[in-house]
Length: 347
Ligand SMILES: Nc1nc2c(ncn2[C@@H]2O[C@H](COP(=O)(O)OP(=O)(O)OP(=O)(O)O)[C@@H](O)[C@H]2O)c(=O)[nH]1
Ligand SMILES: [Mg+2]
Image 1 (cartoon, rainbow, N blue to C red):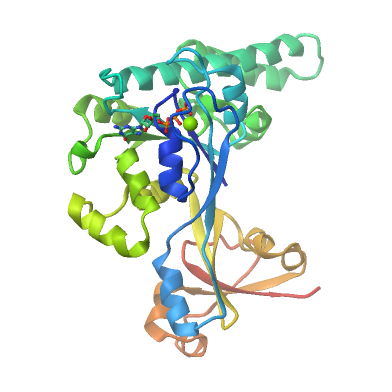
Image 2 (tube, rainbow, N blue to C red; image 1 turned 90 degrees about the vertical axis):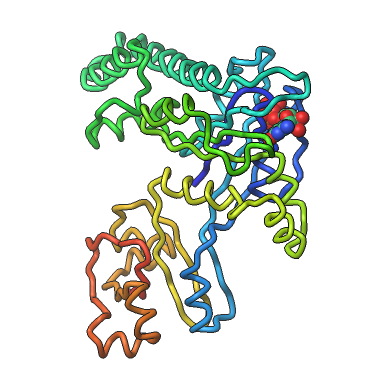
């Protein structure tokens, strides 16, 4: 699962990328940097900590999310370069960094304008893709279904609405999958604020704008969080307390990204390894098995499932079984968040 950290030039994307990943990519590139930065983070999960405490496994593995910091690149402050748009299409969800800090030139931030311009850029980019495809479809026969679908997209985009707000059937969704339309991707807004804004609510007009569109808004003091990520564990707690930060925005952001991608985790636990596996909500047992190994998917017999909360009450598989809390589930069982699963299979 890949989240793109996107937004206009100088919005603080690389700063926030560094804060999230603990890496030290160059900030203040101002369009000179053209290569995206890549990073992976572990999703904090208290359940894995609790399971490891019981099983004492050799290995503990958390779910991971990858991030791509897509450089702003464009000459113009509020425009997206074609190459940037191409890089953006390669992700599963977008996190737009919006600058709400006063920059070095003393220029006042205009977060609302950034939100509006960015939304318009995504719509324009998608219109371009849809129009090009419709043009080609005119010359092809037997593609009427796709044509009707794209015409509907075209009308929606033409009304300056993102495709996120257009209703699609599952068949439409798979027909559109290959186009990687940007205005259809889940979007999270990261408001990058100054240290002085820590503990304050986001500006009302920004909150209203995102709420009206059903978008999640997370306020991040980017520069501060980047400095925080550069400290070692011992100094970090003191730094947090000093600034009055209850929880680093990093954690809040990771949770939001997880929700944005509609991800849940199932768990595997034993003496060898305790591990969280990210899957999309709605994934069936047999598909979840395939995340571990294709052999387990192919030779699937059944899933033995214990809900995490039940396991914590009884604290062993044997006692869960005695208490009737170990369920036997088939291929089509829809996996729930926190299911501890043992797959039975033959190869
Ligand atoms: N005061 C303040 N400055 C920030 C903050 N976040 C970023 N900056 C500064 O803004 C400038 C741009 O930050 P970057 O993180 O490089 O921005 P970017 O979005 O990656 O820029 P491009 O990759 O060129 O599009 C740098 O000089 C940062 O130090 C912040 O939260 N507060
Ligand atoms: Mg950058």
